[in-house]
Figure 1: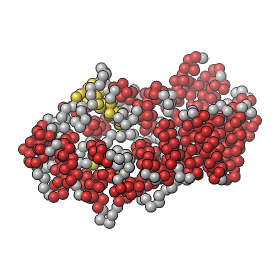
Figure 2: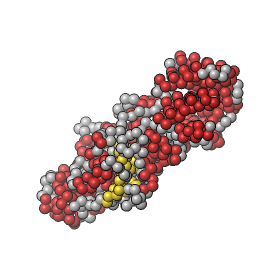
Figure 3: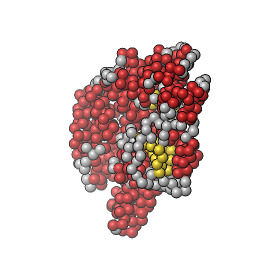
Figure 4: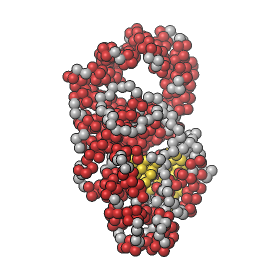
Length: 629
């Protein structure tokens, strides 16, 4: 699919609902972030002190000061390279313009942010050098970092966050538990400390007890250790809420959509009551509208208590139903992005969940949930739900073919191939793995995988799977610089498409055959294939690909008659009108290189201008080429 043009990103989660003080550090950080001469700002503190909450509060207060949006990055969960790719994509850059190297991605990021006014927030920072990569290049943008220790960078304005002042901590406890007296809250804070995490955990216990039996004694709490506070909170929950807490701690992702809980719908809506009980007890908090997260300490303690990798029997059936919910959502997102394509996987129709309004919404959902989806697939594989595991992997192709996560895609499809429960499923997954390896330039491995996929499809007599594996192998050979061999494979894929009556697939094979014959200097055959492909794409009303084929034909004309640029320029004009800037730039570059001299240089300069406008990394390469000549 083409480039996603999202609305301005507003990625910061919601700050805590109850807030006290921090006015001094809030004002100081905001002043630095909005000053005429801005410099990166870092806030550091021990875990539980509230530095992430402070970052989210600042984001809320500055929503209108950064009109191009807010970007949130968590380096504790992602490495800089994958995080940079993800950020560029969320800013609207399509995957086919993203490099594999950090240096090229960094150049791309600086180009894209040069005219934007963004607030970029980086959490989980361990080394300043990694976090500073995300500093936008415009003077109007700002960078805010969070770390657990002072960072080694003289350019950073750094602020240390301490525990709340005892009076403020007591006030926070009163706001969370408004029925207690000021003297009681002050006494509890004096014993338990003033970090927001400890105050919220203490409030959670008192709220849970008050919800359960209408009473919330504070006297005995002074003697409780932090571990006992949490244990007593769980004891105060109803059986339904306690079960739901254990279930949520086993979910594949850190966040979840509240709508997912509809799979437990009962006539009396008991699941809603249990969920609200967890929210009341400060064990679950809203991160984004409609999305929630279980507090990390709950997940950590539950995993420690669970110990074994396998799910306890009381969660087994519920988790199977949950993974089917993830599969249904992923399938709907896949369909919104890729429309009509080959799909073998199951799509559980008994699961009721909302769909997606368009491909951009679906792709953004994949971006938020791809880690959880991969974990869901692993859970399915571990517990023997093999059909759900590989079906989920198949649906995720809609994400991986549009997003720069090649290593993750490889892990996904290697696992899915192992757990595939039929030869047809294995062939399908191996084809996707072969394409993933091809895109990484690992041609030898990819060829072995695609040959295996084709053999399985042939044994099953499945023409659709045979066509997929054959086409992908042809493209592999072509990319590898073996056009003669690619022609033979493309011919087989063309025959397959015609046998199945797949006009669109037939058109693409004709286009590939034309390109391969250009590479073996057989312009006569290339022209014949391009003309047939053009007829097919026009019939299918595919204006974008038809313009690409017209350009290929025009380049053949130019090779035979130097100076015949009119048709090439018409095709480039179509690219411009369709808003396909990257194709427009690449066609201009090809035309310029073909013409040479002053006329060609003019088109190369136009291509460079487009590359720089869109922040494409090919701009640096073309600029060097122009300087050399």
